[in-house]
Length: 192
Image (cartoon, rainbow, N blue to C red; front, side, top):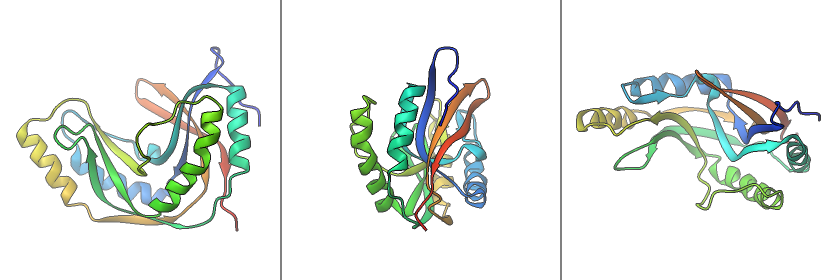
């Protein structure tokens, strides 16, 4: 696989799981209830499950990651999303959709690619991997009334939907003034 690298020779990338369009739509529709000043809702087409953020890497490293993903065994399993949570309980910065079913399998995939990422010199998270779908980012501390409204809206969210594991994707992330544009570079589909 040849990857076109920008002039600086590096590509901003991550490994993730793309969502089925109907699941993305359901999550996005529920997330819109959280919309208020200081809260940015993730665009529907950008909702995904991140397995590993790779940062700005060379095209050569991308080729090696494709090789790692090509040899990865991925099976089909259901992924069910239910409810919203927040990272940073007292002063939340991220609102996410919870992976209710499929979390154990996603953690297993993460644990199988982690050693290869470390071997390639890619920095990895120190904290334990927790599969989730980021639905909103908070850009400032909310006042009590706004915070109460946010948590009430989050508490009202139930089951958002399910899908079958579509595979593991290597994604390019290009940043612009309107946010990020994600492009799939490679997909390791599940075994039949």
